[in-house]
Image: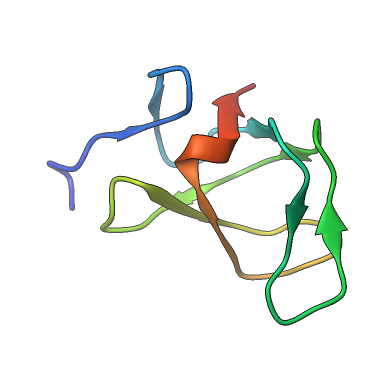
Amino acid sequence: MADVIVRDSNGTQLNEGDSVTLIKDLKVKGTSETIKRGTLVKNIRLTGHPGEIECNTKQVKGLVLKTEFLKKA
């Protein structure tokens, strides 16, 4: 997993524990929640996939987000 480079929508490399900001309103599958654009997500965790991260928000715990909707804070 160490050889996978994860990049945000601007091409900036993301690391474990970074903070990211959403660049688009996202509806969360399986719930009625919408996470708004500009929401700060702290302490991200990298998965084995270069296009995904795991995180927790105030509304939803254990969320997997695609990096194309994020920018490094």
